[in-house]
Image (cartoon, rainbow, N blue to C red; front, side, top):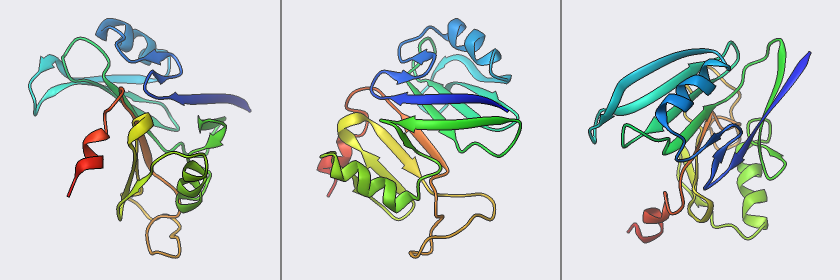
Length: 167
């Protein structure tokens, strides 16, 4: 079994995909991971901006290029079992194998601000956003929500800071 680690390094990006990376380089690097689908190529429209989706047999990553030219954020979806051992890590914490509530507690214990919502959690200081929303049956935690996060988004500096002033 081969292994692959995807490191989340907000606000800089993820392994192999630094934020600010040109669109052509995103597409080329994504193709090395799996099948690539490009949506709204070159578009910077607020509602239909460019996205590059990479479909690996065990996971998906959505690369957001909000200006239509450069990588602005990366959204990694939970890896599924298969031929590769795939881990998505933030500061040596396995994001998708650590129960969601425990993961948030660990982040808070390091001094990070964690904003918790029913299906979502945000870490404004380091620009991470998590979702527990699942489109299929998954184990549930004691709060009735999915036990594990289903996706994580790594954004640029201050990406979620607006959440700090939300009423």
